[in-house]
Image 1 (tube, helix red, strand yellow):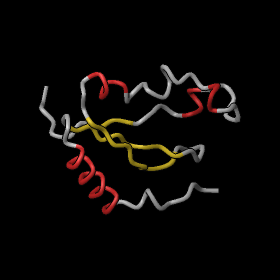
Image 2 (cartoon, helix red, strand yellow):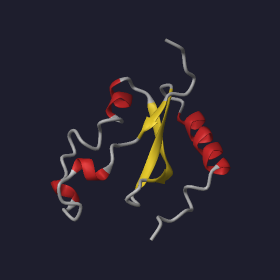
Image 3 (cartoon, helix red, strand yellow):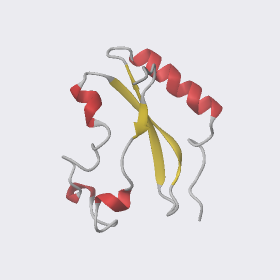
Image 4 (cartoon, one colour):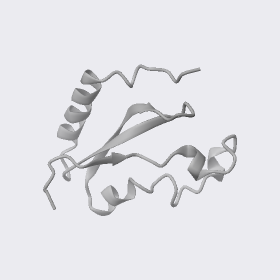
Length: 97
C-alpha cells in the first residue's frame, strides 16, 4: 500500500441512494448512517476534513470531494481547499436545467 499525503474521497453517497422520497424533510433522513458513510472515519481517527463541490451527478444533484488531512492542521487543509477552488470553478457553477 502506498502512503498518501492527502487522502480524499466522496463526501457522501448520491442523495437518491439515501432516501426514498427526495422531497422528504431533512429530519426524516437517517443521519446516523447514510450521510456520514464516508465522513465518519475522520472523526474516529481525529483527523480534519473539508468538503468541496466538484461536479454534478447525471440527475443534476451536486457532488463533493472530501479532503482529509492530519489532526489539528485545519489551516493547511483550508489552504489545500482554497487552492483546489482557485484551480476549479465548481463552487460557482449551477446545476444544468
